[in-house]
Image (cartoon, rainbow, N blue to C red):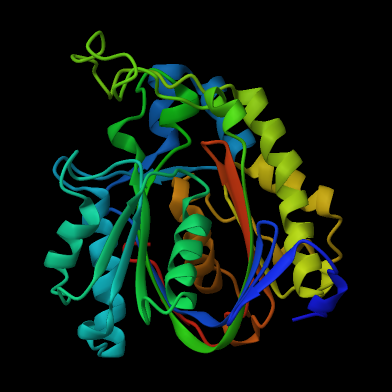
Length: 365
């Protein structure tokens, strides 16, 4: 994965871990399996014509590229969708559940305030009590952060096989009067097993909390307690600065990708597949142009049938695109770059080999 000795300063080695600032190279860690799950209920964007007007709907679809969303039923949670994705892996592979010794659940829509949803999922999936569980509250960048946490646990020697479940049920918090929310953000869950193996993984992780107010739900939490103790999470509109968010994505996205490519010594045009965060068609198209890819089809837009699902967009494009497109053989994905960016502000990228990864078609797609 490239010549690491080109970095003469700013890096340190800890056994099977190479660290260069916040660029990390993990040896003998790989993503073994990936599965995703969408709710059964489908909402067509055309159904909003009466509410917002046909012209507004047409313009929104043109910009976002999203034609329909999947929406969770009342009582159906992110954890339920992630559980189904995990069960699919276990059943398809006749997987020995006792091998899972770590769980990372990444979401902004937890089952409860307490206990941690990862603990609840450990029980529902019938996993061993010899299992460390984490909940991580991240949005669109969450899959990269979740895989990073899993790889860190394995590289440290604490775990051997970590189940990463990332997802959100955005429909439960979308402002129904805001077309930029209700016509863009959908629901989904995912499950990925990260374990020891022959592969290597490289990460570039960054955070800019100085601009945390770019996307913030300040009506929730305890900063404004007790004034907000009766706040309605569903109708509270998140102050998302659309232009600022777009500028953030197209600024940091190409830079984090270039950084991780430099770490592993890959040229951008030798990458077999780019799993980019699927915010909207406009952002994915802009990212491809800014990267100046010789093969832009290797960085596909894929969310027309399920929308922006937050931390699930990366595993969704990995699982949906190979089955939707023609002639896609994931066994050729020896050089893959994953990148995501979102609330925090936070962003990051991964360079890895997915050629031996078990990738399953999305449930309900």
